Each structure stands twice: as structure tokens, then as C-alpha cells.
Amino acid sequence: MAEQSAPETIDDATATGAVLRPGRAADPVPGTTQTALNAAQRTAALQTIEDEATEDSAEAAPAEQGDDDASVGAKGDIEQTLAESRQRKLRLILRQCDRVLLMDFKLLAMSDWPDNYEMAAARRSRDLWVFSALIAASIFLSGLTGFIPAWIAGGGFGAFVIILLLGVPFVRRVYTGKPSYLDLVFKRQRLLKDARKHIEHLEGKDGLIWQCARMAEHNPALKHTRFSDLVRLSEQRILVRNITRREYVRLYLIYLLEAEKAYSRVQQAFFEGNEEAIDKGWRSVAAEPVERT
Image (cartoon, rainbow, N blue to C red; front, side):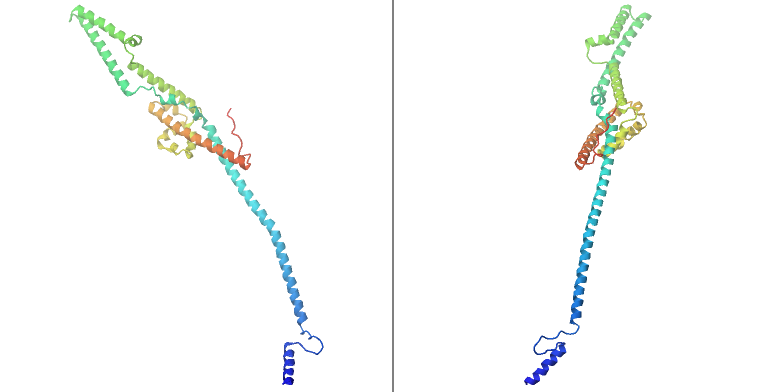
């Protein structure tokens, strides 16, 4: 049994490539050295590939970082350009529409404007005065023709003179404090004339409200169609000559009030943009507005 197992062991060892010899270790299998060499070469090759990949990654990282910095810088330049353009536009609007702040509300509102009731009452008093004077004059003329006695004609003449004196302004102020119809008409004309002078001063040579129409972005009320005629006439420099009624003056006043609101919002937006530019270090954007000469 032992003899049979020994050859089997030797055969198995031979089959696996190792030769068992008494007194020393088994001889290596032929080709094992070559296999180890190939494994070492593969390990060295893999290590070389890993080193090259590490070097490529190290070289690519600064390049990618440079690209990111370039994109961030380009984005910052675009933002600065847009901010500078916006600030320039706001500065131009503030410069062209600053005469809105010179508006005299009381002068354009014409709060002392005589209303229709006062005009009607004064007209009725005037008609009564004229009618009385005509009756007295008729009595006097009738006495000259002999239709009525002379003493009645003389009384008519005296009444006619007194009635005429009552119509004289300084005599009229003695017995009544109410203005006459003629006084009210002159007052209306004077108020309208003063308002037109003020509008002419505000409009200047270049016009005002058509330039304020650019602020419609900050106050949509400036886009209302009821202001379209005023804007068109202002752009054509013929607005003042077409202001002939109080309704036009009041419409002009309403537009200026809306423009004043828009001007305040534009001014606030300009200051906020200026502060933001200062915080980000954009000196060209944060430039001070040019002073008017």
C-alpha cells in the first residue's frame, strides 16, 4: 500500500510541475520566473500609467481653474458693462428732467380761479346794473320829447348818473365787497397768463414732459393716453401756445405730479446702483453725476 501511494504522490507532483527530491526544496516550475517577470512588468506599467494620470490631473487642474477664473471675470465684465449703461441712462434722465422739481404747485393749480357760480352771480348783477341804467336813460330821454313831465325826466337823469357812478370800481367797493363780472374775467385771464409763463419756464427750449416720458418705466401712469397730446405738443415745442384753457393747465399739472413721483424713483434707483458699484469696486460705474452749468 505504501509503495502504491508513493508513485501516485510522485505522479501528482510531476503533473503539477514540481519535482520532489529528497534532501532539498522542490525545483521551481519552468516558466515561473518568466511569469513573475511579466507580473512585475505589468505592475511597473500600471504604476507608470497611474503616475502619468496623476501628472495629467495636476496639469489639468490649474487649466480648469484658469478657465473658471476667466469665465467669472467675463461674467463680471458683462455685469459691470450693464451696470454702467444703466447708470448712464439714469443719469441722463435725471439731468434732462430735473426741471420737474421747479414746479410751482400753487401757480399751476390756480386755487383762486373764480368758479362758475361766482361768474353767474356777477353776470346777473351786471345785467341788473345795465338794465337799471337803461330804464333811467329812457325816462330822461322821454322827458326831452315831452311825453312825461320835466321833473320826472330830471329824476330819471339823476338816477342814471347815480347808477353809472355805482358801476365805477372805487365807488363800488364802498357799498359791496363782491367783485364785478369784469374783475372776475380779468382775474381768470391773469391766472391763466401766469400759469402759461410758468409752463414756458419749465418747458424751456427743448421741452420737458416729452423727455419725462422716458420715466414711464418707473411710473406707468405717464403712459396714459390722456397725456399723449401734451407729450406730442411738447416734443414739437408748441405746447405753450396751445395752453388756452384751465383744463389744459390742470392736465399739465397732473402729468408733472406723476413725473415728480417717477423722478424720485429714478433718483433712488440711481443712488442704489451707485452704492452697489462702490461696494463692488466699479469706479467707472460709481462716477458722480456731471454738474449742470
